[in-house]
Amino acid sequence: MDLFNAEPIVNLLPFDGDADYYGKIMSDKEARHYLNQLLYTIEWKNDEAVIFGRHIVTKRKVAWYGDRDFSYTYSNITKQALSWTPELFELKKLTEKISGSIYNSCLLNLYHTGEEGMAWHSDDEKTLGFNSAIASLSFGAERKFSFKHKETKETVSIILEQGSLLVMKGSTQTNWLHRLPPTTKVKSPRVNLTFRLIVI
Image (cartoon, rainbow, N blue to C red; front, side, top):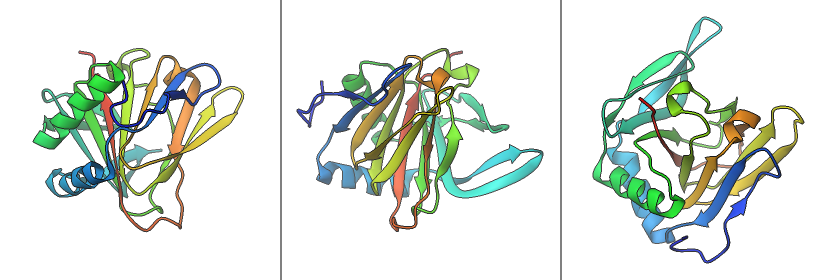
């Protein structure tokens, strides 16, 4: 049940997956509170990747938290999970209650301005299990978020609002790519929490 917005849950994808958009799940005041806490209490570090043999350090910052010191490898870089902060644990429990799924870890992204984004990709690492749910909470600047079908190339886009929840599940990661396109129009930061289930 959506605790804040009475609007119905919408599956953004026309086929081959489920991307359920719940809209805002908290008030603007609550969302601003969490944004400030996340900006200053999370151990942010610049993201790194090894692409075609080159070690890349991005402007975007990331953090990795979990129930235990889970390892998570993407773009040939491995991270060890930190222990939950009080605010992150609160948001995990809220997300679990609304989405009906259980999560044991969270990858956080900090985009300082709209010029920082994310290229097309799928979150289909084996450690996440097969067709498991990934819940995305957004704070700060509203940003466009896009999906692209791997076969048909059909695209779907939405503006993710502050304090909103998007849950990708089912065969979404198998059949669809997603990205956060850069934009020069946004000058303020966005923090994105992606709650995940690491399978041991």
